[in-house]
Length: 363
Image: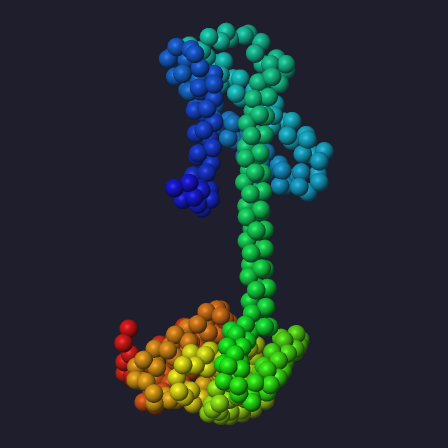
């Protein structure tokens, strides 16, 4: 409830100001009238309500005109002169309204002096106006400080999240854990491929980290990493995945987020790690159109509908990794599906869905 109220106040500036001035009128009505008869409450409430336009005008002129236009621009002498003029002028207005009208209409126990506009009286009365200006500026400063502090914490959180994402991209922990798990199985089976699997895992992880540190990341380097991942999976699973590459144009012209193809292939391999065979992959990358097309063919061990669901979930997971960077479109066909990856500025369609009229999959 408290958070909802804060959000409502934060989003509605008029409501914040209304709440502040209502609190001012009601609060000082009780302070001035505490312990007095009921007519005093009505009198002081009327006083603060009728003089409120004077307080508001004085406060807003100082807060939103003098400070930003003179004090913040270091025009201090002119700021002081204008501030004193406003201080004296609004104090005179408040005394005129109070002594000529309010004190005569309501019983407040205050005697009207003949010389109430004497400079000393004006200054003493102006201190009340000055006080409300200070309270308003203090509340505004506290709010801005709190907003700046919240924004700073939000930026720190985003920076930490970005660092974590960079670390995940650099280390590829899921791929590493996948390799370690299979290496453990090879050790348990006393396989002669244990040493080769360890060497390939270390080499691939090292190259992934080196690639991440490169300033100018060329897509052909990522293709090399995918080829080495295929070799590693061949050793770990004792069967070579059927992966074909078709590259057209200059790979340097493909401006995809780095490691997106590697992450996609790695996810597909891990998604079907418990299956006797992996789906066939045909990877097409075009430097002319700056896009990637990955054809995924069924491995024949499961129903097409179940496999298609896994494909779509994998694509959704990939797109969540690269939110705001790429658009992924899944088109199903009789023998599998095609995943088309384009940069976000190349397409305005958000898209993880099978093509209409193709393969229907259970929800």
